[in-house]
Length: 438
Ligand code: 9WN
Image 1 (tube, rainbow, N blue to C red):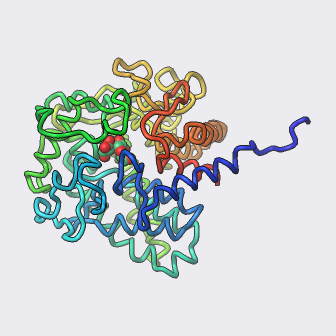
Image 2 (tube, helix red, strand yellow; image 1 turned 60 degrees about the vertical axis):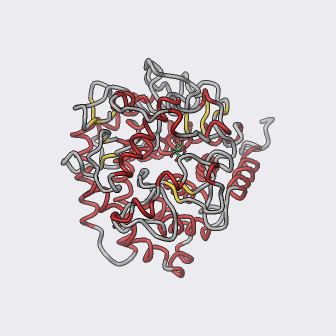
């Protein structure tokens, strides 16, 4: 009985520090992921940021999503970057003059008044919109928040489920590693090996002005990212028949989670949402059929151009734990894999690593090739809770909050030591820590 308090003394200070990061990164209508590395608006970042912002300012959280969706293309796609015109061109690469959305994206209905990229990111938005609404339903109804967002979110999902069903089974495909959000995951090594890189001297990386080269993707990776994006642009952002096409478990799990959220949004607006809920259940079954690997005890990526499931184990293969409709044995196997030697959560690692600890490509500092990220920690925490793994969920929640605060809200951390990597003052780290503190 020496200790007189049952809350760790840092809980309030972590809350204040996280709120400060989000205030510093707020531009007036949206939040930059990082002032140094990422000075524009990013699509899935904004969804995670809104989930945290709702605890500080439901109005700012609503505005964050509204700003992003204002840049939606007429074909329904939500671009992965919305550029801030007052930021110098050389502050981030690839800049608007690379993407040329207004001209190259004309056929796909790119907006005329704002410059964007032409690729997408994971559809976390409907889930975020629902959670933001729940934080202050009175304000949300008064502003017509869901009524205004619903048609845009529905068009976004339609784009993914139809235009991006490249495998013909019902799942959405990504056509660039940046679309999946885990840029240099070893999962992409095999499909990327087929791509002829753009010459290193044909572009200038801005990320190396701010980040340690050992924490970032390699020049060879960048050459391939540039080639793929330029080819897609030169096809008017309308032909998805390029050299890279992958069905990814995390991207699709987030789409399905957002379908459930859209069903709830429809319910709030007076519809039933039954068809959408049924579709989410069907898509869950399809995800298991197409991407579940019982021997690996996790979901894998399907390479549509090379044929078959890729063997690399990325954290994206654990994210479907989020889904309530998973067969019981699949959920149980995912929890075992999370604790087992490949991810070792609760044993060797302090936070879920982005890639297989036993994989040949594992590197505890290089971006998505091993470091632990806070958004995937948040998603796995939610998954554990969804499947009744309360003790493990509590442990992961505590780890996210502690390491976020201790690392200065780092972009990612060494999974063994918690040492900060990449940028600090990173928005989704602050936002998701806030959400788990609430
Ligand atoms: C490319 C903004 C984004 C995140 C991604 C992360 C990183 C960009 C980059 O930063 O990607 O989109 O320049 O490396 O991989 O998940 O959305 O935070």
